[in-house]
Image (cartoon, rainbow, N blue to C red):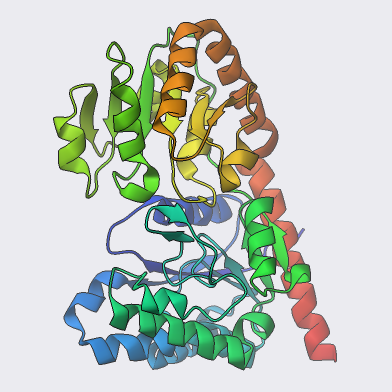
Length: 390
């Protein structure tokens, strides 16, 4: 197989997270396999210096992106443009610039931004699909994005304009959904089924040893959508259980004050993996669908089973009784029941951890992911060649 030249486009978030780590890992994977890779990166921290009208203009159509992509592609001559986050400063002008230049775009769908102004299908702490398949004006009236009517309206207007222009339908050669669950949601939201492939996230982590394991662990953002409050309520039913928490976020003070949680803050990958290899299970009590949390792959790779919400992609990724346990979403009592079971049956949890590692080796390694990515790039380039021929 030839080695296509790849231009990776990503709009960094104001607060770095798992998506940024996924992008960095994929760039490294491509370079390790002999590809020439160039990057076009923007940073949403630049929004803080912009007035609202200027920020909206960039979100709707970035003239800077249009010009930058033209100059960059003339110099680098990529075979494929692989886009990750384009919100807010890259904007959908990327797709039009690439189309004008005849370069196929592959877009990874890390969240539900194309279907929901809040990007998570979450309202008032509950899953909400009211905008799925419709213009997202309910997201404006409910101020779903950052509790701001103005910012929600700007996002809704951007989505509506580009849907009407056919940007998402016609200007992207291939989309990458992270799970089958997510793929079905995007198709229901209007993306062409023939253009939406499934490729999960991946990790490159060696096999763990057989050291003793004990107790639970939480790794992630300390925020309402991640269900950290559900975990805090559940532990009150289990006074003898305590666990480590790795992460930071708006719920930090509440976590720090909880007598059964040991807040460690953000840690480097090596320290996180060390904690994962010492824990007996990872708790993932999310309130929203999740797309494909990188933490899940890292846990599986480190032989760590999950206790997770039976919701969305998590229900697809966690095989109940084999690679972890699934509890009723949002139900602290049911989470407490499952944690109590995990504490009572360490040998069974250890076996689930071994199954989790086997699942990682079969589905989520770097080599497996690279082969899937190359197949998607080839499809995108073939579609571009066919478009030129027609």
